[in-house]
Length: 600
Picture 1 (cartoon, one colour):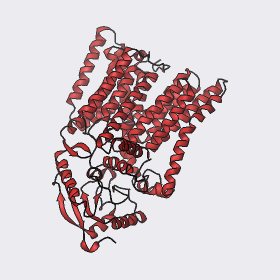
Picture 2 (tube, one colour):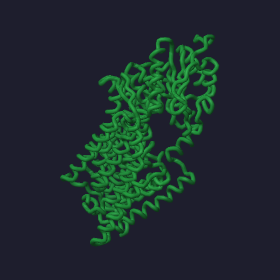
Picture 3 (cartoon, rainbow, N blue to C red):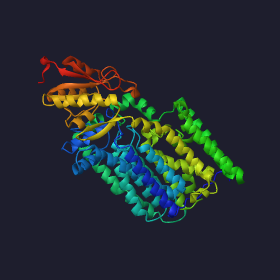
Picture 4 (cartoon, rainbow, N blue to C red):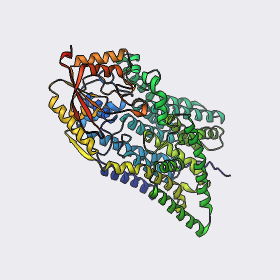
């Protein structure tokens, strides 16, 4: 049989398994130490993730006092950590880094139940390599801590559900999975919703199996009941969110991804295409690249079957070629082509094709019940990451979803490359390691420049911690913080359109509920009028108007391409008095309120 669907049995906990876990922890410690502070972005969303929990720790309420585009789990957890350990960047760094370690470890443990030891270890290692890059798409200082915590919760949910699928104390494991799904939902709503959907599907598949085999379906009801605590917890928080200002206020003036929000109406197509959810011609090309990926896997299969010394020579030659390709990679086009072959951008689409196959195998009882674990893994992967259907990358948004994707991808790869199931014990032959090594090298080629770029930065030291940035940006930011320190007693200071980290690092409050003005945050009409009223009431004297642009949404310039009414108000009531920064890199213009435009 060309494709084998081996019944997944757990890998034993022997010396090699413990060694794999030890190497994972050591890799985490090394990356965390050598990249300390080289994460995030001072301008982009990371500032929101610093500022909002610090304000919650001082008694403010999310949504009513502070605009926030996601469910409340991330900022409230970080505010609790700030109350316990102090308002400091190091608290955020440790929270994100430990979440990365937890996610990698849980994926390793899950992988040992559904695939080979090498696949489980490679998945955990790639998650760690992606987690510590010098970018806003990292774990220690991300664009959204909600995504980080939801990733951790989803990995815990997957681990519990896989153990439930193995038939061991299903009720206890399903209870843990349901609570983890609730934690994911309260951190990043789409991830939690996908977890809940996968758990219901798991219970349904098991119920169908029980019915067809003539067994009692009582267990189906018990497993659904085990999910109730998580569902009730989520509903309770939703009711609290709505009670703060009503459903319209929550969905139209906070949650940007709500289907009827101004952001979704205006920018949904651009935003979804940016993350990979698009059926354009480019997406079709990515689908075609899957054929090349499968051909490479079949090549590895053939290579394993070559007997004697010839096989070892060929394996060594392939290894040298892979190393040479990684070393010679210089252009974006080359890197992109490599990613398409070994780290397919349409990975989620491929896994979606495998979901009905796995469910069919389970429902027809042609495999033992433990195959339910694979069906669950595939289903949860697709359900939590539909946005990255054709956008799986070792960097960017998808890194917070990539763990289950990689694990699923390696399961499918093992069906093709190791039809005899020989990789289950981990294998020591070099040729058995090559498929995983190819993916690792591809990831290193992609994230390597992000690591090297980060170490060219220099430190910005503030009372709230140290963070690294490029020399030009750091000097300009230092000047902006000095300006705030000199002027903060003379009236309100507002940073536009973003750079929320200035509020956090300077230890001041934004003058209004809105602290950043990206595309779609402020809807025209009523919301804009209310914001102008709040600015007048807050007595905002100075504006720090930076050159932050938003080309990813197709409307790059604040005040010109979007939010024209608010910008017109600023231009008619304020005048530029000072420029911060040079012509290159980050800079800002300070605007002062006109004397005849004093607040009411």
